[in-house]
Image (cartoon, rainbow, N blue to C red; front, side, top):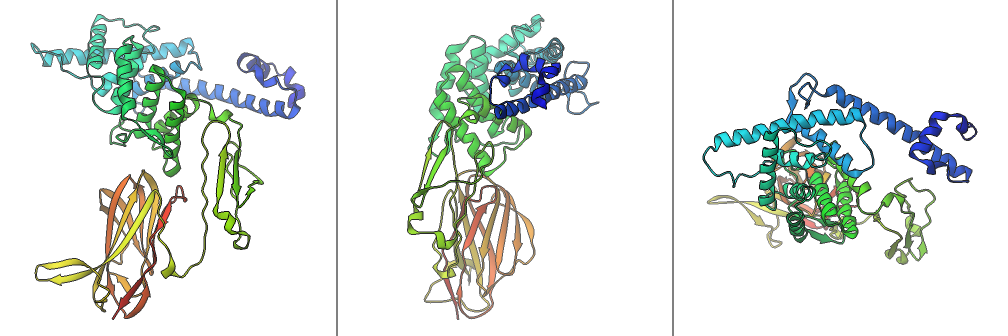
Length: 505
């Protein structure tokens, strides 16, 4: 009925002809239905955009800025964030601002112009009679120049004091643009390029490229790009800014593909951190390099000598899951061959579950690793010290044993569970579950009948040592049990220690 009434629905048809005439190009009825479904999404997006713009206009204060919450005074940070996003929309070229939107942006720009002029005035007063040549632009002044650069032709600087301030800080950015954090350098390169200072901008980009790391698994990234505490220290937003700098000043599509891989790999083991970082990442994935969403190439998986034919795949991602029972598995299933057609990346996981005598378990490691060691707590004249357990001198009842767990991860991970299976001859001295701050991270430690558990909300890249003490309660020979660690966000990142024996007199 939608197809038959489309010609009569002038509102829908006008949107079609104005924004997306290709929706009716196909003569295939099924494809036309799918495309017309997209039409309703376009109409909904248009309405949502208008509502968002109206909301922004309602929240704008009389000074032209935006506040953190209604009723609060204007915030420089929030205003620069709004103008910065408007600047990005402008640079993408996918939408033209209407008059009312340009008026709103102009008021916000005027507010920021006045603040920059005030910064320069205060600087000159505090440095009266001194040379200003060594003064660096702050992150606020740099972000202002970056956000303002896309509107400089439409909204030229009006006041002489603002022009003088903008010229001074732009000169400082040109002088010191290749110094400081990665985010500052990326914004400096973009700002300089948009202001015609391409030589300096290309020099910064060249330096950034030299410091980048290439990895077959993680793509292209910067080792020094780690999360900090301030708004301008978000690793995802910094990476996107670096992508933008390289793409605007010296574009390289193959390079952008590698940079996009790092963004997706961050999402594999953690979330992107905030709505701001998420929107930045999605924009970069969609707008930079080739369009992975348009790729129709299939990923062919040959497992056990035959091609895997999934019965059902998730729309958009192509995700599917296939299980085999033990009786179906042959030695040929040890080999898996994956062939990806088209651009973009694909990843998956192959893992198996089995029953085994605990003593025979072999160590397994990957990007997330754990090792385990039992140490005797010996009493010496100088106090207690940790000693290796000598097989010639087995443990005795009543002795204390420290369990040392060493965890290594080559990337940031969230929601990680570390479980240490205790032998039945040991009882943990710390019976209460609690939150612990150690190794510069916070985690929850929970003691169970047969295991000690550690839950990490966030486990940054690095090496960590965790210990707890147990008391030997009975004699005999016992299976030590493995320590297992797994990222619950991406369960393919898991490893465990080998099984072992422990002897008590």
